[in-house]
Image (tube, rainbow, N blue to C red; front, side):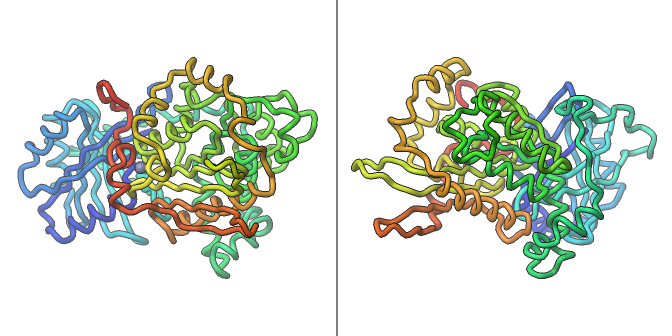
Length: 469
Ligand SMILES: [Zn+2]
């Protein structure tokens, strides 16, 4: 499977610039790469753009110097001959994977043609993902390069490696979904226009969504996602390293016999029982386990509902590097500095192509973030086992989790609908009067642009920086 990921804001900027600068301009983008050799998965991830008129060789060399990969974007006035020319240049000059996309029209009527050049072969691009407002995914028509068709390699069929044989869930037919179960939700999403609402539902159904931490908050999140059909086709990944304890049963919707079962498996069983049409994949482990990190990387949207700051920051880092939407949720009771108990929560959504992440939506010091992110798997386990919850929190309250889960789902749907396309921090607390208040705590652009996590790292993919993150 070969794909290209360009955040919606970056793609809009590229296309607007090409339009303004004229037909002889090409966007020469630097891209990171996301590669999973075992499943023959390769995606180019947009990192930055320069606009070039005329000779592109200098711009290509600059990209290669940074250990990044070239991705050319040309506009609707482009001809096949022009694409052939760029294919030839890339084949001669570049030995790493490189991509070309040509846009004919935009928005509803867009047609995209393209190819990915690896070695000397032009290969078919299977999809263009555009994370951000509307969460669109486009089919890309093949462009085989000079000499016409017949050279692309279609023998290597993509296989879902994360799906054990025999576990495939029965998919409900579209008609059944449309006519029955989701009519209310579709009406609400479409603001009364049910057909529009179903379009949003279909988009959400195709997404791959991950939930890291399936305890009190995360299990409710997973339940609501599955109940709304989110990830029913794309897949719903659930990851948690802990097992269900007796004390979880006051807030997790699980039967008593689930005690002792890994949380991700117990929640997956519940979801399979209630919503058999959702493809759910449980993983036992924390973010410091390689398999969990790789599974999250493959998602479009990652929810984190974790106790450990290390895990939410690690997910934020992955989200930036691989262009994933990250929605972090936290809630319940907490001690304040003055010994008081505060009731409330946070919902922090980080959208690719827009500044803002849990690193700058909080009160972290950068050295603390670096230290937390550099823990290896063993150190992280030790840290977890040494933590007593009673030192950190006075307790937990299932009722307080519900508004946090609800608002985070609402943000997700606003993103799918295209109402919102930027990072947002929502803060919720009970005032001294006992009444709840929600506030938009999204910081200023100036503060976010100083965050090393979201202002750098964008689209780097697998690239490793020496001596750093
Ligand atoms: Zn940030």
